[in-house]
Length: 440
Image (cartoon, rainbow, N blue to C red; front, side, top):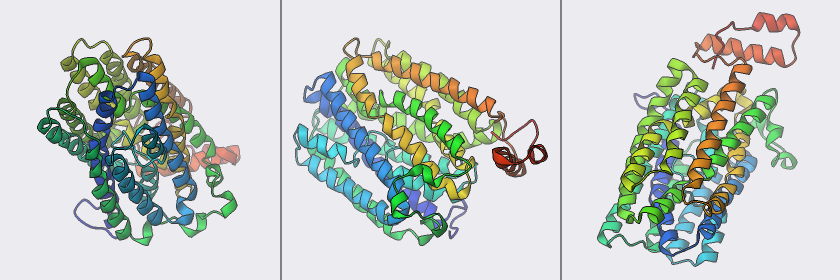
């Protein structure tokens, strides 16, 4: 990759960050609108859950397809196709699509309620950026911060039509996704061949759909991480941005303009948070940063269900966001660190697929749980995600991933030890052992 600028990022990395930013801006705008639109149409809790479930299910299916076939058909080509689909989805919804059409569009995976970790394009971008990182989470910090900042601007844009129309919600505003999709196609066309998968790891057609076939010695650790990430994603599926917008509008009867300001503030805090995460990771280690910030954020999430007013609920959500997203760049860096370079695309596809596959059940479960109490999904999500944090920490300690960052030399030594432990003789394992302060 050709280096460009004082930050040391390549031109391709800058383009990918721009692609994430333009997509996040569109999703930041439409995610708030979608939740408010569902509330304005008077859909039941269960029906809202069905719509959001279809949306996340589409994201999961599209992400699996991107992971399975992206390297074979070409990452740049598929990247452009995904942005074309975003433009088409925006045009269809803006035309005033009825419920059944909205469900069909949702199942295509071209809409999302998340501004950062938002579907099949994320899987491609994560693999294409891996060569820039080397386990420090640095490039992923830039990547996610840009997405969060752009999502903040997208959410803020909701306040303009919301205030001008007296807080009304209009489907035609989804037309904003059309220029977003077109801009993404331009970004995809400007990427260099360097972002494509190495020829050596290309798969035959019969193996293209088997993500596990791309993994070698790292398969056990990727399997364990995939299971843990699936638990976390299951909890997140209960409280997507669309659900939060719906919950706040239904419980506190706030206009869409105020929701726009809230999600703007949340996204700004999120951008700062993910930008700081790599610094914490270098100081305390990847896993320690993930768990140490994520666990208290889940306690704040559960507390939102008991907020007596919109002001208190908003304050809790903003406070939660200061911590909750620091695990995003560190999680991506962790996955890319524990596998060999030839396994990166497969590892990204498998771990992301595990996250996206379980998330569709979240909104449906939230709709059912809301029959008990409107804020019940917030409590359940906080408990599930907190359990994930504890399980991740326990596994990391058991696997010998010490809670301290290490030098590049120690990371290489630890990688050699892991390979030796996978099948080498005892003498090789002892010789390769990096010592008590293993890389986190």
